[in-house]
Length: 125
View (cartoon, rainbow, N blue to C red):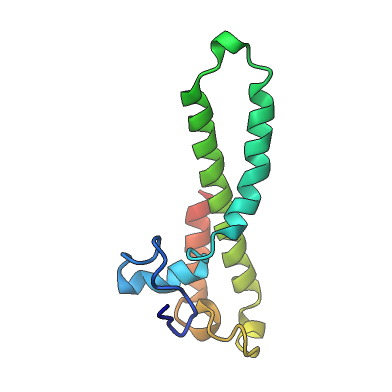
């Protein structure tokens, strides 16, 4: 498993085909580590499944369930990515002094604080 200095898994399917200059941003949103997205998505999926129980049987459509599942998955991924950026942005001075986190994109200078802020604003928009 090839690694770069910022510890991103270059063999991950979501990262493998990205341009080289996008890798720091992929590392910033932890694109190669989707467990946080799953943890945010599963309660939403359970809530959607519970809500579907109250839709009359003849009005239930798989396409509706699929549409709302996709919306919730995108929202979980977006908010988790924003959380990762916000954490790194707030801890940028501290992270550069800690051995485990000194290679994170903002702490190492691969992504400027301003670029991270605009990425976060774009995801929130």
